[in-house]
Image 1: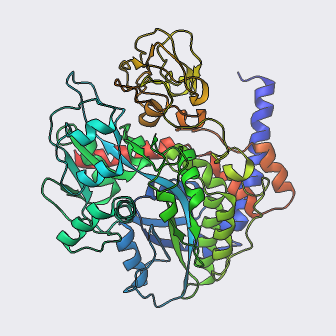
Image 2: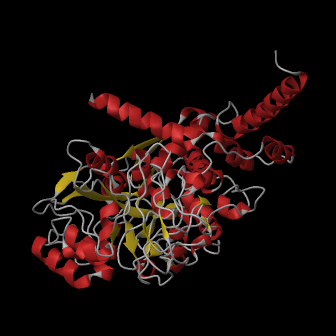
Image 3: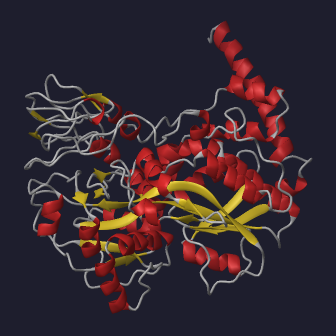
Length: 553
């Protein structure tokens, strides 16, 4: 029998929930808003950002706002928009000169993230490699067909002299028009212009970027982010393969991603904070799209170089006020409370200036209600309320000094680091000393390999001894927590706690009492933004993955 205290708390929660539902009903799904109740917003485009969009759609659907989104790729999404088949599109690149919409429109950012390099590789002992490091010079070779074996000297050099297995590389590329392909190729064109220009000339593609990656000898082409990630993670076809895909898809499948060498010479992984740091160099165009050239060459040692944004393309004409209002409400949700889901899903939340840019843009859509203020009370975006991964956060994700040993495994990631008396590693105990290997009790299991040297507290250089991080089974946690590379003075990745706990708090939500206070203040839209933040992102991803696997059986 529940206690009286429990019953009181339950009654209070139900009462607040009733108030929330009443106010939300007035804004997105009640007789007072018949257009919202009857209309289904049609949308299509990017698969790079689809995991975030699908989470947000599920959140708002609980309150009657229906968003029908088809992940068909950025290029196809823009074509749907041109054909007037959708109310909005999502793309990583803007309309091209030969694409001329018949209606007026605005661009607005929806989420940031890193294009990662998800791979499937085991060492000579049959253990999964989880600490791969790659430079842009090596990546351009792999994805243009000039580097074809994991034992290639260029890969060995990136990995501090560690020779990987003598095995053919299977590059997995996109078969459809893709914003991910566009962003990856733009980065290669900027950082390795000679090699990329040669490849572009051979296959008659633009020297600046391409949405359609040529199928070269040895490559395998798959449709969509889901398609390339599924191929790499496949137990039969996947071993030896590597692909480029938004980090969310690697997290979803619990596969590792490569640490990428940035302009400073550091190898970094695409944590939310490293992406946010890189994007401080983005420049805003007048149409609210971004110029990313300086992001690719950001000299900050923490910056993840292949970082970018995804954009909504919203109609400002040729759309009814009722549908326009629903599109705007969706924007108000995902730009504020919806960004709480970004980091756990493998993205990076929008900073306040881009939230304002999104609101300025969507206010031009017919029927758009007034947006919430970009304040901690009305906009529960982590970067607005002060809990998000901001560039000023402490703890660099850079190579430590003194050797190739990693900082201890992160307790937040599920593994314990080896080592004796050193400083604390990222997210848990680890560090230097004479310890050997750390074990990973997380779902991934396995033991971490020891190198020499160590990384001390918050990434500061440690000294002496040998240390190792455990294999927790979380691809970013394993790497960011300091998975070590044996070798000749190369260094491991140390990371801040926010990077180790990259999956975040899946059950977190804005407190109901705070929501009630906002509601009692008669603010209609902000409670929507706060109240919807409670759907755990992991549950939706697991359900989608089970559905996909079930259809394949």
